[in-house]
Amino acid sequence: MQSAIVDRTRPFTAVLLIPTGIGATIGGYAGDGLPVARAMASAVDCLITHPNVLNGAMLYWPLPNTLYVEGYALDRLAAGDWGLRPVRQNRIALILDRAIEPELQRRQLQAADAARATLGIDVMAAIVTDRPLGVALKISASGASWGTIAQPASLLRAAERAIEAGAEAIAVVARFPDEDTPLTTAYRQGRGVDPIAGAEAVISHLVVREFAVPCAHAPALVSGPPAADLAPRSAAEELGHTFLPCVLAGLWRSPQFLRDWAQWQPLDITRNSIDVVITPTSACGGAAVLHWAAAGADILAVDDNATAMQVPPEALNLRATRVRSYLEAIGWLTARRAGLWPDALRSDPIMPLLPTVDSPGD
Image (cartoon, rainbow, N blue to C red):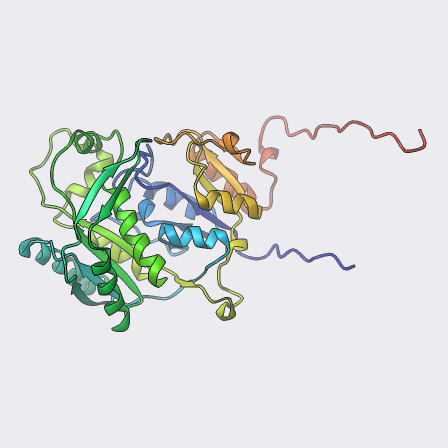
């Protein structure tokens, strides 16, 4: 029987995961995962990550070899159910929550106009939901943030209308509660969990699950006075009246999702295209990590990105390489991309001798 031919010429592709709403010390704030993504993008041919890593409110950074993929779609990619097809650009529809006050709504529309005029992004239309979405924020027993929306059907009707009008990606702006809580104060001071991130994920997951189109969310909040004790990691959210610019910039080149295997083409990205998955060490229990580990991808677990979770790879009998920092992870990726065994760069790369096996006649 002829042995299978392994293609070692395809792009070296990594997935960077920093789950949202779990208080990650790196990537759990307003775009503070961007420096990690920028550095990793230079160490691989293709980097796939999710909006939580790349969104910085008014700030963003174009990364030509990086794909902006919503979390539910990443789970489906990891499971082998969906594929990704990179695109040159998407036509984006903007969905606005009916609960947004007129002045705050105008700010979102001005951000969309600015993206069209200064970045050349095709924001094709704005749609207001037929009912207020009714966002409520929650915190789980584990310390992760999550949330609910009272009118999910209203959001889905608006998304369906946008797709019928020709939208290829959807940006959602929902009205979020403004009240200050101890959790909000802690987040603004650079500690604790982002109180709104979990609810944002619920909104984008709903649209992506139903329609399989790229989607990301930006909250509508009333701007408050400048805070004297604001942490640098939270500061990007204080720069303007809307968080929409980074979402539009991300969705502009977000890949399309493929659910029909009959339509897949050789250059599309599938589960087996992924070489390495990078995740915080304490957050190895997510569906995407488990699926890719089962598929044979290398799992890099980063120790110094602490989270509110307590699920290290050892708790799941997961085969993973633990690294101390993202800097070490980037070195590991660079070695792998060059075709090197990473342990050869350590001080003692000696292969252990296995015990001698006696022959059957002995």
